[in-house]
Image (cartoon, rainbow, N blue to C red; front, side):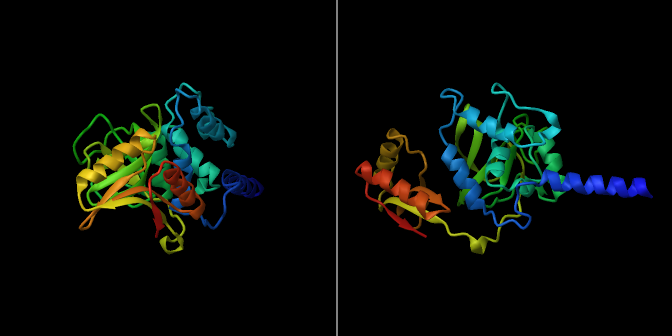
Length: 263
C-alpha cells in the first residue's frame, strides 16, 4: 500500500513538474503564439539567429526524451515547442518535442490530433506534413511541422521554422496532398481574441495591388495577402496586439506607404 501511494505521489509530481511554468487554466490565445512566430520571421541558419530558438528549447526541462537539440539538427518542431515555451503554454501541445512523428503521438494522447489533411484549418492550428506522399489521404511518416497563420478562401498561410533553413511563411491550398494532418490546441476562447489587421492599400485593379506587393517584398516585408470582395486589399499582417500592429504600420509609413489599422 505504501509503495502504491509512493508511486501515485511520484506520478503526480511528474505531471506537475512537466507543466511547471504554464498557466494551469490557459489564457493563451492563438494570436499570442502567432505573434511569437512572427517575431522570429527571418531567423535563419545563415544569420545564426536560429540558435536563439534552439537555446530556448534546450533551456526547458525536462528535455523531450532527454535530447538536447544541436544547431545542425532539423529544427521545425524545436521552433514550435519553443514558441509555446516562450508563451508559458507547453501544456497546450501536450509537451515539448523536437521530432515531428513523436509529437504526433503526444498530440494523440492529449486529444488534439486531427488525422485529416483535407479539412479547412483554423488560425493557430498546428500543421504537419509528410513529404513522401503527395495525395490525400496522407497517413505516412511525418517530416515537417508549422502553424496556421490564416486561411483566406481556399488558401492557407503558415509560418514554419526550418522553412528553407529559416523561419518563414508558406502559402498552400486547403487539402494539399502533402498535409498529414493537424493538431488543434485548446487555446483561450476565440471571443477573447482581438486581431488587428494592418491594411497597406486597397485597389479596384489587381495590377496595382501586385505592384504594391512587389514593392513591399523589395523592402523585405513578406507579410501581405489579398482579400477579394469587390476590390483587392493588400494586408501587411494580422496581429493579436495593438503594439505589434502599430509597429508594422510605422514601418510602412517610413517607407512612404500609406496604411491603416482595422479589426
